[in-house]
Amino acid sequence: METFTNHTDALRLGYNVTHYDSCGVCSTTQDLAVYIDKPNLNRPTLICMGKSLLDFEMGLQCMKNIGFTHECAEIWWYNVMNTATNCFWVCIYHLFSPSNYPNGTLNACIQCDEDESGPMFKLIAGRTRRNSYKFLKNL
Image 1 (cartoon, helix red, strand yellow):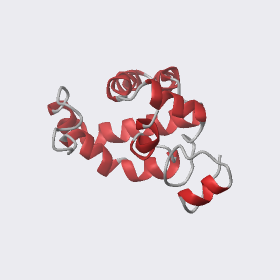
Image 2: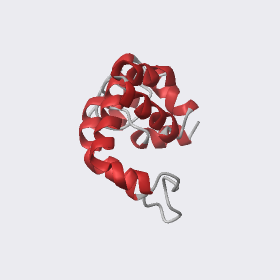
Image 3: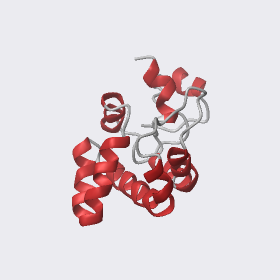
Image 4: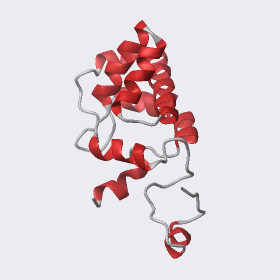
């Protein structure tokens, strides 16, 4: 894995670009495989959040059982718990809403997650579902 300043340099040097922005703990091929296999992680991570409320290790193990590497599972766990803290009521209200509306906007829960947890998650994770989208849609 390598971080490049632009897509062209990576391709010129023989690298395959699998996401945009800097690499991080979720930039591994194992974590990419999770995104390919499970394009919607809302339900599995919600289940892990519930387990985390019972026991930290159980929640973290749940994230690892989704298929993430240990380091990626940790940042996902912290993301989920931060979102639960900061977005709980809006997410309860939108529990059964679609993640994305036909006009492309995110539901209020997902938007809250993006606003409250997204910046730190992106910084540490590197790979996200959204910055891998162009790669994933071409599979």
